[in-house]
Length: 204
Image (cartoon, rainbow, N blue to C red; front, side):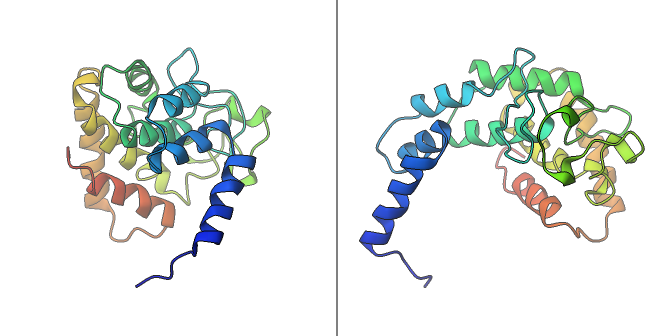
């Protein structure tokens, strides 16, 4: 059995989050503890959504730029799933619409970040490069985005299938079937996490 926090350490951890974390993280904590419904977290999450429907603005802390990215959008959709948002919820509909507009149809993947990303503070491994495969320095290590973030985003599309633009799921699915056929071993922990999230999606 894993070790458990005693009451004092638990209370200290909760207090630390409430005193220092982002409003979104505090709202998510309160919802997870049963001390609030999903609405405060939904309101806080909406601050990270752009008019184009995607999410940015540091929702994924490694990328602080305001521009929408597939990585931040996958994080947002993960939160929306946990909060029980339906397909008709405006943030869900906007995010899935953005995914339909930004898929690299030739490769069947979403790039983790795009070319407008490099002008804002970001982690060094998030550096945009026109010379890298798929347009990002992460592409080689992350198997060209075929798992991270594409596998997780495919799972999210399955979860809200009715909101997906016509043909989008089929296009991504066809590419991912080829990815599975071509991949003998998933070496990156982040790729593995995204593959696991797809595998755990009941709607898949």
